[in-house]
Image (cartoon, rainbow, N blue to C red):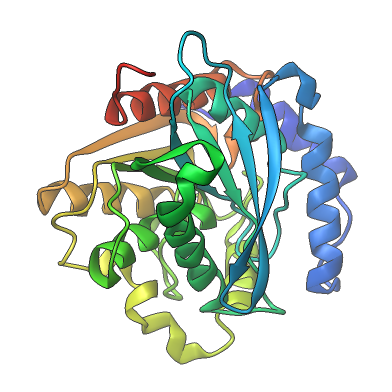
Length: 319
């Protein structure tokens, strides 16, 4: 299919006003990206939730923040399922503020408590800081979900782009390194391949669709300044042959995304190794299209699909 006409117009408008980021530091790029992403969002009150709490926990290198989003629930006061959410941004950008609307919408669609993990960012904190923070957060929730109204027996992971990598990797690590048990993993347009050449979509969609091959390479350099880290088992998920016994997965991909084929390949690997897998491909869409919640039908459909899938895998009379 051709690129969606509405996204084509939005990309043209963004290109006309985009600043030159080539000489910017990571901190400057982070500020520009956060400002741009905030402008894309609908007002948070368009997605009301019952309650939002910030919870300070101890991470591997100091305090971490979990932001908890509570759904409106009718007729039940029992513990709620929990979806742990890891944000995208190439391990460099992304924040509590820029993901507020997505977390609100996912909370409403899934009827779960959404726990946003404010993990450490590169280049100040390169690999393995983000994966270690992700694992620590999930282990904390597995032990203490009851203290904030969550149900540790009904726990799923979710994330977009780089955050989808953290969700997928954390699912592997809790299987291999000790709990908690997970019910599912929801991966939105995952960024999974750190090799220089990449898969075919990295060339096919290298330019003209917002997220570029150049940007992808820059993000990886910030996250993996040590070249040897590219071949670490945590960074080679597309080569793993030990994916059996992972929780069910929903993998979403976008047609005009440089990392599209990475999600396709991972969904294939999961299914081939016996993991119950749903692959949902969004034609005409670009990387991070879900940011257009409330402005484009397919962005809304993607969040609704995640919510329905999460409710199904976390099925309980209380939902």
